[in-house]
Length: 124
Image 1 (cartoon, rainbow, N blue to C red):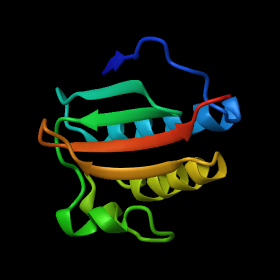
Image 2: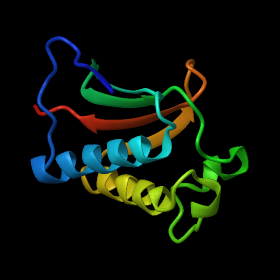
Image 3: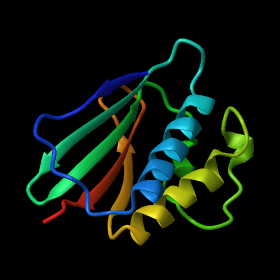
Image 4: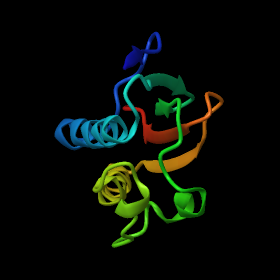
């Protein structure tokens, strides 16, 4: 796993415990799903009045048809993941992001895996 922190990041206007929990859940879920030797990268950057976290994997571990379903409550996708459990965890990351007045998205990464993006308002 690699970590890339942006320079001059503003503080996030959010509960630190919930923000920590979101990053932990998302990172743990990705680490549980990638194959040995796979890589996860966590990047942060400022984007105007927002702070953006990208969790990027270098391999796909979610069935393509299920990508849009991962944030829906009670979607049991565990049989299509390498290991069971991440689907519910990813649902919780979206819930936490919304509680913190942020948002959560997923798309394909240039490395051939996924890019989970969490965006939060910067503190004033």
